[in-house]
Image (cartoon, helix red, strand yellow):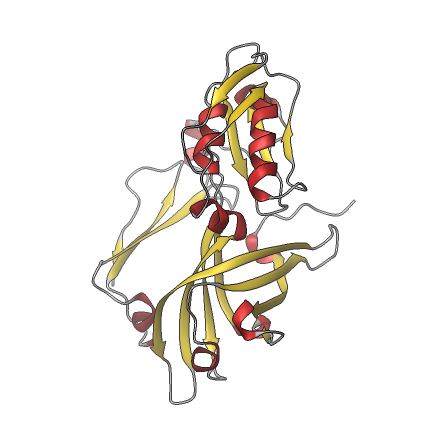
Length: 276
């Protein structure tokens, strides 16, 4: 049996292609140009958003003329092919910053949102719905994001059929409002969220999340003995704060940062702090 992935670096981007409706059939493959990509998932939110940094050495900025409506199609997965590669499409909503690294290349940072988030921003729901909370959320999703949109849930929902009137809200706000009215038989709340792995919506109660199999094989537990153990099993995070007025990309290029960071072990107190 293959080992479970334990690091984001285990995932590799095998395809990243930029397209746009106004550019017709032209495609721009930036797979080899991606420096960094960050996608943020939220347990209490449906939107997936993130940032992407690429090295532009082919005048991509001048050719595409980014206007905030371009698409980028990703294909990524584990290098050992344990799982099938996942495919997701994002909208490049903004060119956050650009900085010259030399005379021939430029560092570009973009903000990303899912296509559903883009549709949500320009849609309103003003309709009467009947059914259980799960059924109503499924109807709102299909009405606004397509008939193939699926909502994954369980059979723990306590509330029965109801009638609701959505007062001209966006689809995400409407679905979140309905989910807030749902509880399990034990009274635990439901979370409505999306993940990067597929295009489906999750409606799962807190009890099921707590009783499910954890993703991390080494859960955090604190005790005095473990606090003295500096092994690799200790959980650590890196915190970094930058001045609001500084240009992060330009600072990286010139090898200096107006920031501070500190290595923090959750089992230790008074962690060291470094400024540079």
